[in-house]
Image (cartoon, rainbow, N blue to C red; front, side):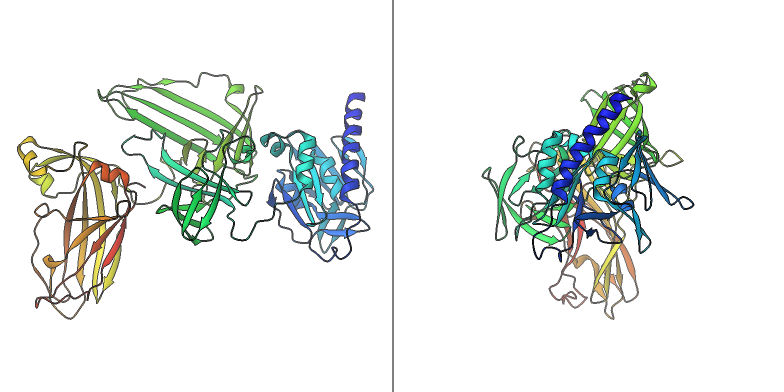
Length: 565
């Protein structure tokens, strides 16, 4: 007990020293400026602004303590608010000069009280009750609070965290970028060897610095004095990095950047989020002889802050993700090594196992704000539904036969389907509606009897795009369906590909008013062109009427074509 009292005394002395800084009278004229509060560098939203009275700062209790991951309860009969978090407890009765912290009585600089129906407490109590570091910057009028978890994630000592918190929040220079942006694509060829989706990151910090490679612990563990951060400049429509690389650059919106033609989404931190459900990540890599290595990792999260993990890894022998069940389970660990408590701090998932092991991983929501998909470390996890399927949405068809174009019906080539999508989107010009029903990407193995007809595609193979679309003639004139031209734009190479003639089923030429017809179009690309381009555009136009005049009047209808989900 003496040891515990000594610890409380030391903490109180530390907090008293911080409080002396915190409650220093403000400079003249600063009192009119609103006080802003940040927890782990993220702004805290209050129903009532912090109050400064007699040199003491009072803050709304619930949103601040919840931002620190503390569960709050209220006893209306005794006017007592209580909180707990991983063995730490506190209770505070309104209008009382004392409070209880981990069973010990502490004296408050000012009692907690109700203001407009909201419970306000002295700021000093936040540090006493949680062990957090509390900093004050009088020039900015900002309060910065570093939780114990964030201090550890940042690799800071308590003293260093105090120094950082006292600095306040760095001001963002005009024209500077700030935040975490990411872009993803699927690695269909396996060149990048991603376990699931391939992600590229840009983390803009400190006004003129950016990190594209992140430490294992994620964004919150990034230290530009130790890790590899680059400086950058925005020059017109270009992003210039200090490593000598320059990319085309465009700000599409507050939440999207376009860098080198790729769209990067801004992802917000998921601080103190509580999850519920089973999340599964699977990966599979095949060898040329038909065997492969399959692995899966499952996390079961609960709202009470506990988790359980389950791993599977092993070799398969038939080249499929399920194989012949020859994989070896690695779930033979003790429960203490597979379960524990979790905390989400900004962009980091902290796992504390019951055996004392701790792990930290990069964390964010790829489909924010939906929690059906998680990015944990270097893997993507989908929530598992009650029927055992994942929670993904969309119209990707994972098990489907190749479209019956001439390549298939005449057995000119075998198709290895890479990706199928059914957008069912329509656009129209001059009362002519075109609906893109679906499309497939497939790698071709040309039959030797037809190999002479497929020369000039290089030695890395051929990829085919087959698209199904419907034309509805809602105009007052008869159109010539087969006059419609189709092109596939390759933004990454500033080139376009024309449709492969003779590889689609024929349809009638004339389409009268009120009639519709379904067509196919096939494009052939060298595999390296397919790999080097990410997003494509399928264009339709011009389209002539039976008199030979362009109904579209020089305009085109365009659809985005993806090569992955």
